[in-house]
Image (cartoon, rainbow, N blue to C red; front, side):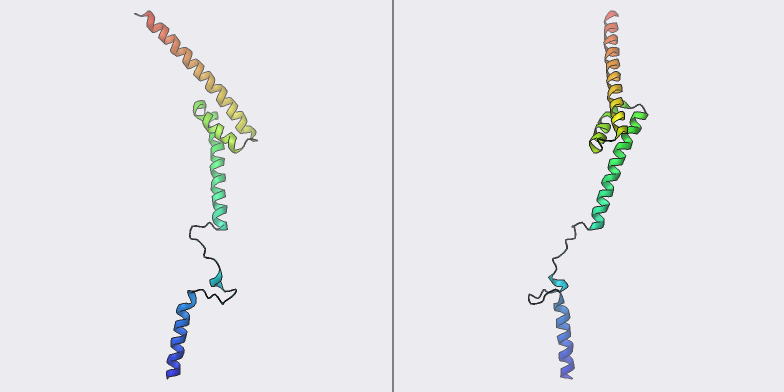
Length: 125
């Protein structure tokens, strides 16, 4: 009976101590460095790259969509960012050029209109 209790006690002690690293053991799983809970795994890295690619594609499509809608003033900064993301994209380059040109025309027309309104406002006094 005492041998059985000794064996059970020994097995319990061994089971409880299995998480401790044994400096004499080689090649065991407990010798592996701990994995951080925040360290990205291969799948996480792929997902992060996928999310970045989605964000970049969204920026590019937003640029083209804003120019197509004629919202040039809003499109300029979006298209500038899209051009940084994909400098070789001909659609982005064309959209950026059109957005900058049309926004400049709108600004000039607005400035001329404001100047005319100011001039006409002075005549009424």
